[in-house]
Image 1 (tube, rainbow, N blue to C red):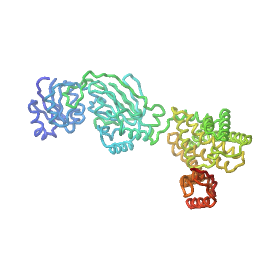
Image 2: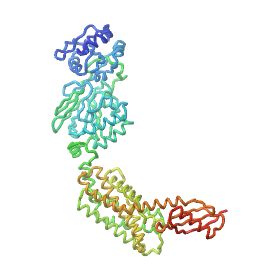
Image 3: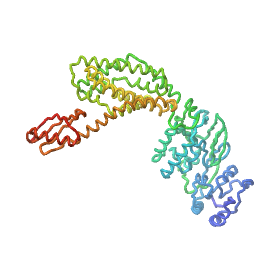
Image 4: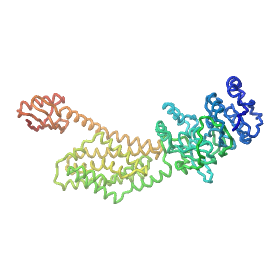
Amino acid sequence: MGNMNFTLIFDSGEKSFIEEKLLPLVQDIISGSIIFDSDNLPEIAPGEQLLLYLSDNQIKTLLPVLSSTKSVLAVMPHPGATRFCTITGVDPKVEKAVEHLKENSGTVELDLLYCNDRPVISSVVIGSTFQLATSNFFKKISIWKRVRNFIGIFLKLSPFKVEITQKNGNVIKTAVAGIIVSTHKNNSLLSGFIPEESFFNDGMLHALLVCPRSVMELIRYAISSLWDNNKLPGFGAHIKTDKLLLKSPEGNLAFTEDGNTHSASEIEFEVKKKLIEVIPGSMLKIPEETPKSNEISKIQSLPGGEAANELSSGKLPFIRRASTEEFKDLFLIIRDNARLKSTYMVLMVLSTSLATLGLFANSSPVVIGAMILAPLMSPIISLSMASLRQDRRLVLNSSYTIIAGLGLSFAFAIFITLITPIHTPNSEILARTSPNLLDLGIAVISGIAGAYAHAREEVAKTLAGVAIAVALVPPLAVAGIGFGWMDWNIFSGAILLLFTNLAGMVLAASVTFMFLGFSPFRLATRAVFISFLIVILFSIPLALGFNRMIYEHKVVQTLDGWATEEAVIRDVHVQSIKPLRLSIRIVSSNPLDDKEIDNIKNQIEEMVGQTVELEITTSMHR
């Protein structure tokens, strides 16, 4: 650049600092000084070398004059010029900034972003999403500080409609919670979201638009960003271009430009390439080659149509609401699934018949195969949605379909039982006659899986269908076996399990649909409350069964492997609780007489705390 001969333009409020600290450092490279006056800007000759010690707002006032005169600028780290020092890479310490200036006199040309014909140093922020965040928000700060900042942002989130006109004339009508625009991704929040390369003179601006569909979606991103924040969020859009126009169809857009608040119905952005010439600071990354000016338009995540209208109607919902389009498609499927069809009836009969034969054969693989055939998921999910939205007609249709399928299948299970010459319950049958809270848990998870599979197209619904069949088809078949045998203990246990599982599935699926946004809370509360009461009533005998199961396990753990002087007890099974009847195997080295067996029985009764009936098998070892 030749010899340094700067004119110093400084802030009058920093006069004492200039005289005491700055002038001694730069007196050998300046030829004069001017006190900045915004009402009376200095006359600057073309190509003049200027050394600025000004705030960001004072520099912005000078920029139009400086760009027209093609002056060469060097900047000192004024406490109010953090934005301009960042984009020019100036060291925040004055001594180091002056030292670098004297050693490196090369210049670079900077692009300048204009917003409604006003120069922008750092960025323009629209909406409340980024208002609480600072330029180092996504840098290494404490986890708790990030959490506090995000909570503050959540309280202000209110999506708004906006029309985005791109350079090619394409108009995007959407709703967003926040927009940030800058030419340099490394001087703003953009550094945390956009992985693409960006330089100070590539002639491009970056626009980041974010529109989470719910506070929960933003919370999930907030948590993941604690350890991985160098990526565009799933609810974010990125536009890289040199011109952009934003319009508000509903009034003015409030925005912050370099920290200054403005409002306008239209905001026009334009990048003016290589407008000012500066001597870069030591911290500015200068590309070795001419940067590419490729445009980017990642806008797939932006909502449109009815989804945009619903999002902009108020505060961001805590839980994502399904759009009208999503609900319409799902509701058409659910209405169709609620209708009674011949294929449904045939598959119900086949699956229950196969399960009944598998139970008689004590074969788990056959029972599992029967579950795959069962089509019960569709009407149960329809009943869940109908209850949630209080659709009486859909409730009747889906209930009729479920009852018809269960009734006909029950009849076939009874018929197969009557013609099968087996009257002894095996382990597969008995496993479905003592329901407990674990069975209810299985039903609840199955209902959640079914509702989620219907709400998300990418999930295979057959997988959730098998989960629902696991909880319903085997107990239905066992109930038919119990009725055919006239064994009311088997029948009552299986039928209790069947209806408990059914109620648990409907409740779980309804709550899942509610949390996925397919019904307002005020509409869903009554149906969920009624379903919850029904499940609670069914849970009372299940809780008793669960306690019984725990007691049985304690008895088995206490006795199995217990050794006396005479023998060791093995293979303990609880056959009944009241009275407590146990099946045990006594292993001894010598034959046991009645007195020794009575002694073992007395010790067992002492250990379990009650009278015991024993079914004993003995064996000897040497």
